[in-house]
Image 1 (cartoon, rainbow, N blue to C red):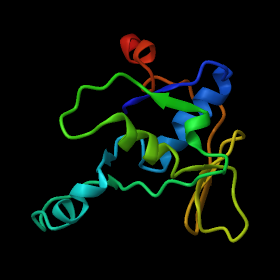
Image 2: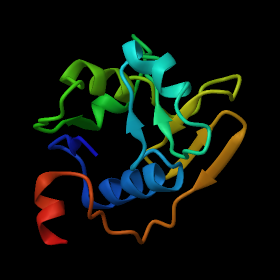
Image 3: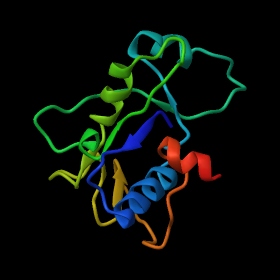
Image 4: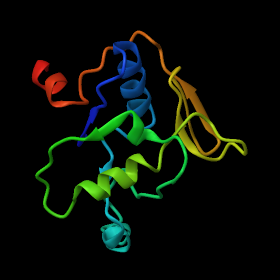
Length: 134
C-alpha cells in the first residue's frame, strides 16, 4: 500500500486499521485513477483483481486523518489519487449504513457488509518501517 500511519496513532489502533483494510480487501487492491477507470473495467474478462476507485468525501471524518501518503514512485499514480482514495473511506459508520468505513474500535463495513477486527493483530505492511521488518 502506498500509505503510512499518521504520527499520533497508538499501536493497537494501527493494528486494527491494517487488519480491517486487509479483511476488506483494500490493503492489496489496485488504486486506479479516475482517468483509467473505463480502460481497466474493459480489460480481459479472464483477469481477476480488486480496484479502488476514489469517491472522496469532504467535510467528513475520513481515512486521511489516520493515514498519509507514503513516498511513491509509481508511473500514472500521484499523491492526489491516493489521498482521494483515503478520503473515500470514512471513519465510523454513517446513518443509512451504505458507506465504506473503518472505526477506531475495529468495526468496518462496505455497503451492507459488516465486520470486526480481532484486536490482537500486529501491523506489518503499512509504512516503510513496518515493511522493513518483514
